[in-house]
Amino acid sequence: MTATPRRILALTVVLTVIFVATALTTNDIGGEHPAWDVLLLALCSVPVAGIGRNPLLALLTVSLGYPLWILAGHDGHVFHSLPALVCIYAVGAWDRPLRLRATGLLAPVWMLGGSLAGLWNTGGIQDIWYIAVIFVLGWGLGAAMASRDAYARQLEARTAALQQARRELADRAVADERARIARELHDVIAHAMSVITVRAGVGRYLIETRPAEAAEALGVIEHTGRQALSEMRRMLAVLRAPGPRRPAPQPQPGLADLPDLVEQAGQAGVTVMLAVDGPVRCLPPGLDLAAYRVIQEALTNTVKHGTGGRATLVIRYRPDRVETEIRNPCRAPAGPVDPGHGLRGMAERVALYDGRLETGMIDEGQFRVFARFPNEAET
Image (cartoon, rainbow, N blue to C red):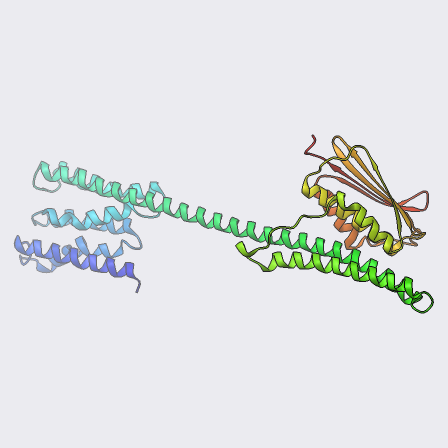
């Protein structure tokens, strides 16, 4: 049994005891029909036990029982109206539509109208006003409590919705951060492994005949590996350290670091001709990083798949945009080619800034990667 039914049962017992005690003090019980008196007494108080399920039915029952009690010749007492007052309050506070709850106001209208019509004697005009005012106020108090509870439920629902939205936003931020780190790791590792693989092959080929060049290749492998390891440690440190223990953010690479990238490609056996068209402009950090990563991925693919050992890289600065274009000799594929994570990553980075990416073979037997980034900072 839950707490609410227990309280209702206790309230019913208390009201019944009050009704009986009042009737005993006025000698209203024990007349010619005691059984009828007990039945009417129960009809006037026991229905209060049903206010938890259907307070309107309980009110209508009590409203019928009280006039019958008066018509049976008993005196009306102010305490005798307490069960009906409790019921009408419960109707006002009922979690049902207002039209249904307003039906409860028919009970005092019925009792007041019957008294005015002379169907029963309530003891005077004061009792009539008591019925009219107190009962309506009881219903109004219950309705106010119902409105307050409804408002509280709305606030709880809004709070739950906000908390859910906050959790979804946090989950989305985590997913976006993971995707960003995955792209960064792919760009760093793919470029480093391409250089390492090429130089390792060169070193193995020259180890016996030209040991000095083989040692140089090993030096390139060591330098490239250390760079990649340093960047990986930086990204993993950001993931490990929560809150204030997070390391200070390190500067991200950008187009100003292209000479180092060109040098690394040269160490991997690809000579890159770098050209800059237009006055160099300061780009937003995110856009600068995205352009750098696109070029890095394109040069990585040149090292892995290009032929001829050369490539051209052109950076064009315009007032409202910046363009990057990489070309390198490449054999045309025999069939459909899976774009792989590299090209997909480039497309995602360019799309993030509402740019345009073009990749594919051109007439001169070269593979071309063209990216255009709108420069919002200038527009």
